[in-house]
Length: 134
Image (cartoon, rainbow, N blue to C red):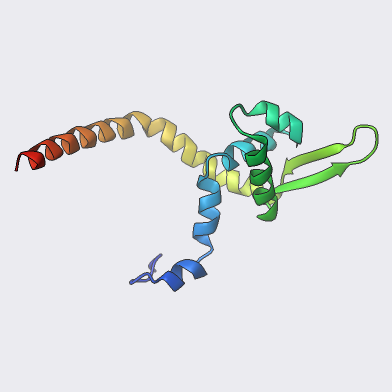
């Protein structure tokens, strides 16, 4: 069984929901926010303080997208301690169950990846220097 039919058409890409979800998982903040929420529920201001260099606007957008995808729940707290509390859902936890091993793999192989990048970059700079001499 092939994962991708060839040729891949624009219609194929639009019809496939995988890319959309992977884009969410691969963005700069979503996994970080999910990982925090996996530890315990957070209020908005707590999350804002917990992640440096994440603007309130981007945090709001990230939380809305995670909630829309069903990965995070949002509960309004009424009364004296009014506010909003965010928590990871079962679906969000199941995603983290898949992503955490990937992160562990990256940590285990980081030095090998860095060495490969360095070799590539050195070879690329040599190729560029040679091509400018032609």
